[in-house]
Image 1 (cartoon, rainbow, N blue to C red):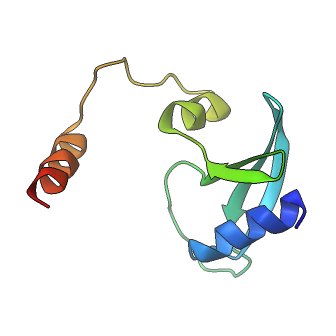
Image 2 (cartoon, one colour; image 1 turned 180 degrees about the horizontal axis):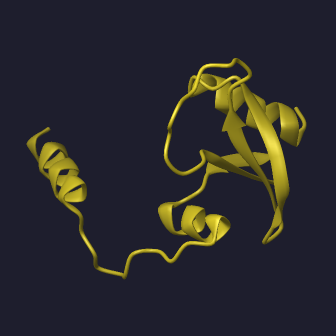
Length: 92
């Protein structure tokens, strides 16, 4: 499976329609998931997929910020949602 096919498969598994190649970045091929219909959606930051050496993964929050030209949150910052997720994980 080539990089485009890997990214498209991951995008479709997440409910998106296609994967679009955006650029090369730090030796990764960067793709983002998108839709092909005319329905308006607001999804927040792009769903970035990073492919290198036949392996694919989602970008981390910091990588996503860097790819979008945003400044990531300071190290050690914990949002309310992060605390809620941690609480749920500790309950299981």
